[in-house]
Image: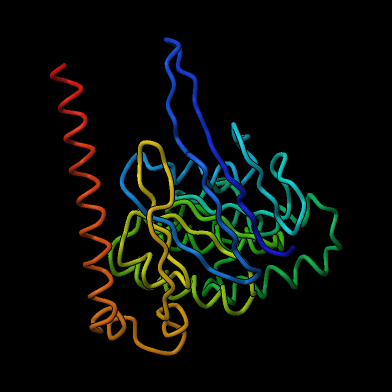
Amino acid sequence: MSGIVLDKISMVYTLNDGGEVHALDDVSLDIADGEIVTVLGPSGCGKTTLLNILAGFLSPTKGEVRVEGKPVTGPGPDRGMVFQQGALFEWLTVSENVSFGPRMAGKPKKEIAETVAHLLDTVGLQGFGEKPVYQLSGGMQQRVALARCLANDPKVILMDEPLGALDALTREKMQGLVLKLWKEFGKTILLITHSVEEALFLGERLIVMAPRPGRIKKEFRLPFADQGLSKDPRDIKAAPDFVRTREEILSMIWEMEEQIMGQSESETSE
């Protein structure tokens, strides 16, 4: 089967004092090739744990993850990661960062140069190839991070709060870039965010997770990602359907947050 399959994933962390934290419980999710899926939920719902299991950084306590039908047993070139901070080599130039993966893979120099030029043009960094990364703004560094990920040509791109550190205007511009890259390169994308609006705008499907233990609470199928390829983002985000769904999800998350706070206060008082 193509795409991503999360099959009854559970994750339990054992603490130093012998206690346990149930981070995930029986999470199952199928993501088709070329689909973009966003995940959000309150703190402690296991979003990042789920992403790290899919990346191969963690092994689940129970269940199995498959990408393109193959079990995930560790990190691999079929999965690329984009983090909240670019995790770039700041002492290297933009071009050297983007070309790092293909150079390590032994690709021909001419092919690497063509790939880098195309990707820098695609992410709007023409003319910045010889700039050291540390001289770039946060938004430009995230463009480099996206280009570097795409240069490795992974089947799946995993994004952990990739736009969370950006200011509001830059963040909205980068949301448009994520959609552009998704459509142009046809990658399967799983993106974690704390922003309800961002999750709604970018996800063909939006997964809301509940905590203690982490599990899928509700799934939404949405038209806004496709609309974002041709319509003004502000018009989309002001549309009645968008606003209604946003308020529904916000209410759901607020209710879960209040339950968490109530449980914490109860545990403290005991």
